Image: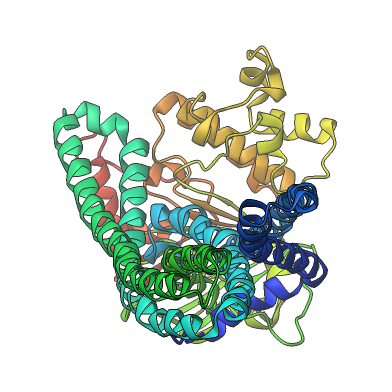
Length: 587
């Protein structure tokens, strides 16, 4: 017999199974009924031959057919019961496991999503969990049922002829060799298949999302070739699994054939000598033939279990990933009100690269702070520290004097609204997208937010108005329309701290003008951090900081920074060097 080593994660799966004890008990009763019915089928062969065909007993001609009908009725009833109950348990376990996986992924920090590919994560939730479902609801069920059947049939063969039974049992350990050996190979290759499937999902996600660029650059043939290469890789791995699974059954059948050949010779000679009856021999043969069938099935079931264990490793690798962003033991609840935000000697590194250094910054409640600098200077990293998408490596960030690491994560993020450069919307109605951060908002509040974001008029042009579905990533809207929906969403959240991460840099002049008006409504009374690419969009800032290579190198208002003729002045010259009016006229 083979030994199956279970890790803690596999024991966790068994605990999920254990939660359905009552249904499992009923399922096992059904399996016992199937096993008894299978053993009874083999047992009835002897009276059929000896009593009916040889002794011509008329009474048995009535009793035995009734017994056969009863046996097969009970077998069918047991089969339905165990299939329904075990699949109910299996599907429930997989639903809980899938929910646990998704819940945990949602709780992981932003850094996790930057390292992992979206398609790979999707594959873990869909493909890998489905493979586990096959193990839990089918393989485990089949294993238990076949084990019960083996026990019942073994009793029959020992009851009929214990000497022949001993020889049949000797063959069993040899028959289990391919179960062990090929099961190991299946598990090893199955891991490769699942990883390859994850890469394939990631490729599909990228090429479907970026189909516009694929077509614009005429790269359809190139992407088709890349997809073909990936499916070939998956095909080769799948065929290795097929080979390992296909070889185990023929080898078991051959070893079983050797045992059956001996039984025919040995049992036949006893019938010829008159020391045994034909009924006994055929009853024994029927039991042995039926015995090898569940043993052979165990080979395929073991392969399914090995694949399921490989998939569970990939799923639990994610579930066991710990978040770097920890909830404090005694979290402080931050109350809704205007906030001041302070950075005290903050350092932050990402992938061992120091992104921010010696950041000291004090932003008063209601102040609008513009953050500018060249791409890659650390502007976005700075604002991402405020909602604890990442934690500082050194130093501290405070809101009204409270270290944000001491605050409840939910209450901290409840104080913050974000509008990013790339509008992020969901495949839902306009109403639900605006109310995304405030699910209890009234219809009047949603309309008010839409009007303040200058979105109301274009929403009214849709036949469904606020109940219009905007498509995947807001595909039915223009860039400016999407951004105004995002602004309406932030307005409705009504958070006292606002982060604008280059919110207008991707828009044309007309759309930018409308969005800027909407943003001014959004910034009123809020502590605002504005990351700006275009210097023309920060006229309303109370103060500007210039970040170069992760350090604040300049700070002040526009007039002060322009007069210094430092980094701000260089950025201005770069942006306006082709303008007819090269003179800067601060308001």
